[in-house]
Image (tube, rainbow, N blue to C red):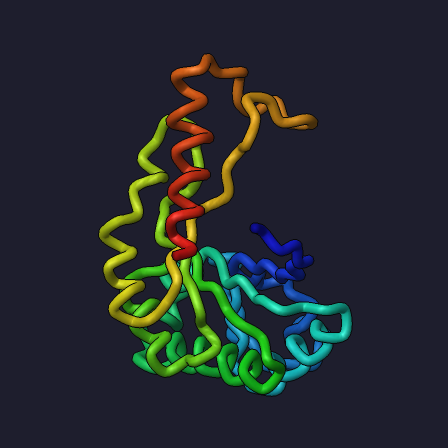
Length: 195
């Protein structure tokens, strides 16, 4: 038996150096902006407090921080400072906890997953690679071992449930053999990961 619940999720990749939230761009919050990299990182607790508290007003229950590896590797400040990346994740986690939200980490390094020990709002992380039909995105056994050790739920990237997705011409229709590996197998794995 499946229970229907409406999941309200906020998804965030890396922050742009043009973010209107940054005080340097006319906003109200402190960010480290690296214009040459085109990226930024918030460095003020008040930013996360306001962002996540305001998001609960429209029903947010889970915040997904995607592209963690890109955010980390794409900024000089996170590569040079021993504390900025940790501070970023702790601030995000504190605001989420204060607003009864959960966090999913995505495209994370092991260091990000281990950081979740200090961030109780993190409940899961994406244990698979990006979904692309025919690749190894369904292999999530090794990263699931880490998830289990940290009492986190592994998740799998989304996947197509039909051979043709309306409005998308990115993949051609597949035959039945590909359907088993591209759609049925990921679906079954995602169900098993829930138990």
